[in-house]
Image (cartoon, rainbow, N blue to C red; front, side, top):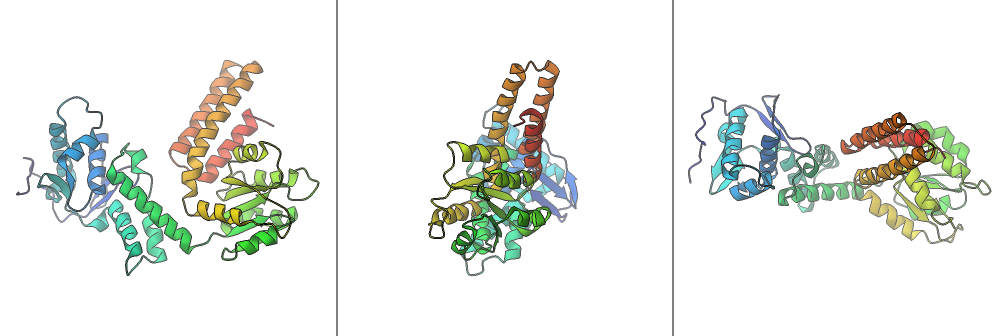
Length: 370
C-alpha cells in the first residue's frame, strides 16, 4: 500500500534534524528547536515513538490515544492529529502503511528506541559498556504511564527494558556501604564481601564524614542502638543527620519494641528495616544480604516515591487531627494543607529524594513535633 499524505502538504525539509523524547513529558525538536505539543499530539507521538519499527496499528492508536472514547469519531481525530504532527515537522517521516502508522526516523533519534536497543543488547555478543548503560538510563526523565496516562503494551515494554538495565547496572556495580554498628559491624561487612564496605562503631566516626556521605556512600545501614545503654538515641541522631540526604538508609535493630522499626522507618523515610537475629559474631546475617541485593537491583526511587506519597497522606491526617484537638485556627489548617500540596507536587514531579526527605522532615518539625 502506498504511503499516504493525509491530504496535507508541508514544505518542511525532510533532511531537518529531528529528535523525539517520550521518556517523560513528550518533546519533539526540529533542528534543535522544541515544537509545542498539546496533550493529544503528545499522546499520539508518544505511542508512535514507543512502538515497534513496523509501526503501530491504527486501531491500537485510536484506542490508546482516546481510551475513554470522548466526543467525535476516533478515526477522524487520529487523522487530524497525524496531519498536525506532519505539519509540525514530521512530514513524510510519519508514514501510513498496511494499516499502521510508523515513524520513519532513525532509532537513535528517539529516546525510547535507544533505551530498548540497549536493553536488547544485554544478552547479545556485544553487551553495552558501563558508559552506554549509564547513558541509556539517563534518558529516563519519567514514566510515560505517568506523564501521558498510557497503560498499553508499549509502555510495559519500555518499563521492562529500564528495569533490566537497572538490574544489570546493580549487578555490575555493588553499592558502597556504610555500616554503623558497635557490636557486629565487621561481621556484617564480611558477609558483604564483594561490596565496598566501611564500618564505623562509634558515633564520633560518623560525625567526621557526615557532610560527605552523599559522595562516599550509596547505602547506609544504621543500627538503632549504636551503643549499648543509649536507648537508641545515637542511632536516631544519625538518622536525623541524614534526613535531607539522597543516600538511601536501612534501619537495623535487635529485639525491638513492638512497632518501633516501622515507626522509625516512616518518620525518617528510610528504605527498609532489618531485625537482627543476634548481636554476636556468629549470627547469620544472610537475610540482610538478600534484602540489600533485592533493594539495589531496583531503582530506590520506585520504592521511596510511592512510600513518600502514602506517608504524606498519613501525616496530613495526623496533623489535621492534632490541629482540631488543639483548637488550631482555620488559617493554620489552610497553611498546613498548602504545605502538604507543595510536598505532594514534589513527589509527583519526582524531585530529588534528598529534597523530598528534607521537606517531609520540615513538615514533621512544624506540624508533628515529637
